[in-house]
Image (tube, rainbow, N blue to C red; front, side, top):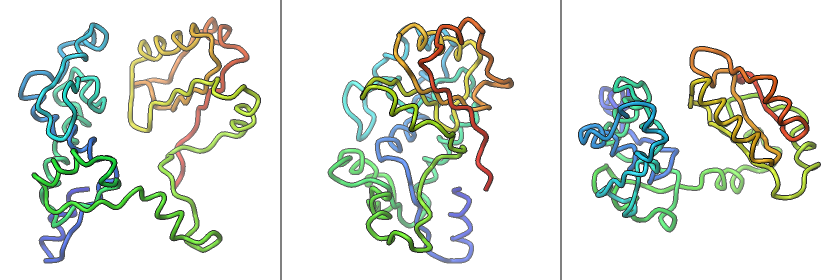
Length: 241
């Protein structure tokens, strides 16, 4: 949404950016360009996802701990395509966070001080205001017109989940969720699926309709037989706005 920075400048009004992710996340995204310039990203081939390459230590990432590895970066670097839309979007948006007059971030100093100090060194004034969800709970009275709930879920809720969880022993269920953006091949999905089938634990699996690139997720009948009785699989449709 950084087009708003130019719009604010054009009409001569102050502009503050709201960064809703973490300070550590921003510093990692901001290092994507350096990873590309150093030849660490994109991956040479998909084999590097599994052969230990992601254990490569990346020194000198401002605000982040020593020993930070490629696997610790947000997963949009795990592509073999230099033109990957999310990789390039995040390189662009992190660089453009220098353009507003101030940056408001959903965190607090005691949680992420090293990363916040690193942000302060390269960005306009940075103001912490978080966790935002706790502010909403404290400031919005229950039952008021503003009390409509706050969440980032883009998908419809599925009935029966709580009842299914309540039927299981405490701390016995594995939760598997890929977020709202990640996509994978059907081969990668199958590898996840058999890993879940073979571990023996009950699991809650969130499978979006668009999770698999260019196709619907297809799981073989023998997988369904292997997990019978110990899975709650959530397949939803995107929420209508």
